[in-house]
Image (cartoon, rainbow, N blue to C red; front, side, top):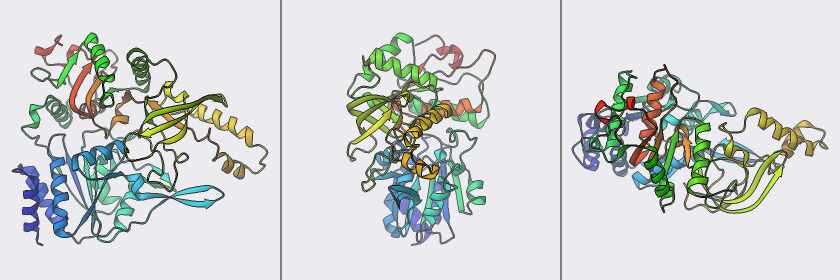
Length: 477
């Protein structure tokens, strides 16, 4: 098949007349998909509402014509679920696709990159701005391993999908998978890219996408001045007063679709306050945890899953629900609970029996502090001091269930980084703290843009001052 014919198929599967930018992407893709160059990759960037979703669907529908398969990947379980929902096809996390466990004997395991047996396959990686290049397994980064995995297969190609306006990985200033120069120079990929900027006209009828575009344009122009929001004439993008906020929380968090609501905050301390308020004031829960509680895992855990099953580990960012509480206990100076959980982003997976560490639920730190981690380690080590060799002692500790307790946070209110890759019907955005006399910066705009684009249906703005709104909308709720 030649490039022109493939382009026509892509346009036909796109479903409607492409914009100039979309037509360019389809043209690029017709060459990319037929390319025989070494390590072929394409970086598709675009604002919310520019048609990335429709383009991905057109690609998937066209691949059988050139005898190619596809594999849908995303950095987190929730992002994979979103990708699966909009394509109608199964999607996996990157970790679960490219890593496996190797038995080392004596009950020890090692995480290694699995073999890519795929042939003639396009690997489509959504939310690539979330992929970091920090070193983890054996001195390799997730991005290193992803790229090596893909191109170890025969005639495989890599399509990254991202949005430069979103927050980069925690602790970094840029997203390496969202940067064509890094992909070219650090990973030796033959890569082309295009950034979609024209938001579809019908998308701008949405207050969510209209305001996301306003913030995105400010980012492009490096304009951090207020106002940021336009709410007039939009039912799906609203500023709400404290009384309305409480009523909406009562209504939404007690509904059958409670899991479709999220409060996005700037700090872990603020998240703790909101989560306590939701549980005690809205859900009337008084215990440390309760059946039905929604939690987010905040550190990868490889201890509690049956390695022979589909879910080999519980990943940082996975959402879980408490189905049953079996036991509370205090050990080693910390509080624990034995519970049965459901991984809500993997509806076909079986329930798991796990031990969770309760102290992280009310901690203002993202996980255990280094001091807390050391206290727990030292206390557990005391039980193994009869093993004289330090290496052997550490191996034995690796099988201690308290040492391997799942680290979790309540999932009703989360920091923006923790929500990245996910979508909820209703998003409540709590105004970030800004000291008197200080002005916003580019990171603040990225934070707001990422928060706003988590919404599928509605955004509610909470505690924002008049300055954030256009003049005609000040002091109006």
